[in-house]
Amino acid sequence: MKNIFLFLLLTFLFTACGDDCYNKPQPIAFEFVNVDDENLITNGTLTTFTIKDENQSSIPLTTTSDDKVILENVGEYDGVKNYTFYSNVKVFDFSIHSSKFNAGCDGYQINKLTFTGVGIDVTDEQGYYKIVLE
Image 1: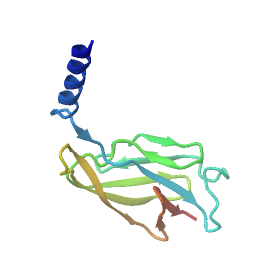
Image 2 (image 1 turned 30 degrees about the horizontal axis):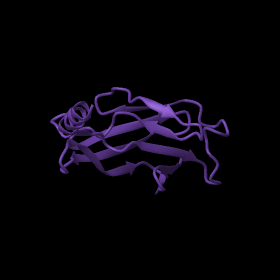
Image 3 (image 1 turned 90 degrees about the vertical axis):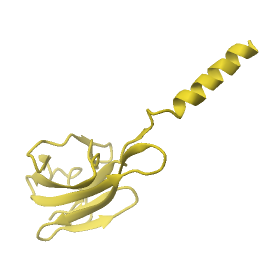
Image 4 (image 1 turned 180 degrees about the vertical axis):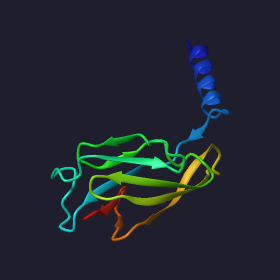
């Protein structure tokens, strides 16, 4: 029994530290609010929205239970990629600056987001970006 346990433990250690180690970038989440800090999805103002990259490919989005929007599968590249947010309220552009992750595993990390657009007020909150659209 001890031999089987030792074998399983060693097998786990060698496979856990192998070449399959990959770090995905941290997720990006947006909360869209008005000037009174009311969530625009919650109050029904923001009804349709999509994000496209510079190649006009749609970015998968997930809306959370507290009406924040998570961008799926972004930041897995080395460099800068441009995106456009389209909605029934406002259209704006932003870019994501990413780089290779250098801490023992392969992967990428998001270094910075840059927003451009008239009247866009963005606050980097704890774990998400609050964006004033109205």
